Length: 361
Ligand SMILES: *Cc1c(COP(=O)(O)O)cnc(C)c1O
Image 1 (cartoon, protein in one colour):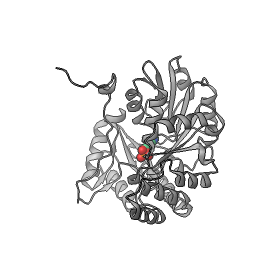
Image 2: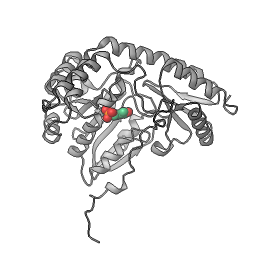
Image 3: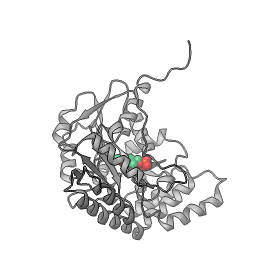
Image 4: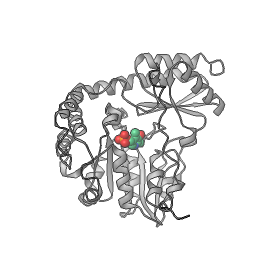
């Protein structure tokens, strides 16, 4: 039978599995997608609403007003920034631009599950690298590089593990790569990091020819608006601008993003809430028959003694109204659950439910 055929590799892709939500109208608390427990910045919501008065007009295509705000806040030339319809948009564009058939992209075994999808969609192969206790191992990443390697995908901090590489380790990784290999530093959780030896990839992205930093507003209260941004050298910005959708960030998103970027008070409140309850949940759950991997993000990965126990914990939490993220199917971590940091009530509730399970105490 003759019919249209997808490009090689496309049908090998396992579709992305989003975090589950409760049934519509049900009283569940969603802790499966790393969303903000404090809503969005009130200034961002006001800006989004204001944009509703101009829905008949195409947005300015380069997201100028959003790049200007990001440039002001982060001290970057707006010309070094490209905005996207979520950072997923930019990650796809980077893969499409720098990967093709016969190429390889290197990533961590428990790295973000979008990287294999976009790599295969571009016709290239993914090379998975073992980690050391769920943390990226720079020597192992460098050892996995071959002459076919074109891209290294690094989420820092990483999803779903919450672990991170220090500034000096990221620099060592970059220093060990050939100049024709693109290092993509995905700092999706940067706003939540409290570790003193961490830095975003900005300095490398502004000073090296083969590094880009990718960021998102999704984890900071604007997941629905779909806003991502990247910083990189001129030649990469130029290439991405040639193939991105000409109006890839809609006007309400541009306006909400610009207001959110400038709302330091809200962003600090979210970071402080997260740090407090991330530490609390980590301490509360540790010492029972669960291990909480130390996290720098807005979630924690909890490891149980067996996959069966993790499945039982998932069900018990769901019955109590807490939807967390299973990470067996997407990541192969069968004995783990990823729990987003939520409200104080949600964190106390989750801890109570888990600690009351007989076989976990
Ligand atoms: C959530 C997430 C993203 C995607 O964010 P969007 O901007 O919503 O597309 C990218 N990278 C990592 C590591 C993430 O966890």
